[in-house]
Image (cartoon, rainbow, N blue to C red; front, side, top):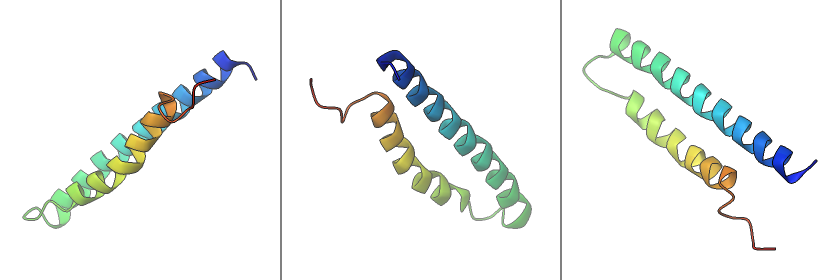
Length: 68
């Protein structure tokens, strides 16, 4: 796999991760407001999902990659 193909695969994976996180969070917001609208528990899920997503962004941007 060439370097360009590897970077494209990293970006594709990141886009998929962001899309799944957003769709899931939106669904949870809907469930939250239907079940317990007085307490926004969906924010805890969004925060918990943010850390792995931030790590994935850093990997896709190759922040952790050493210099060759």
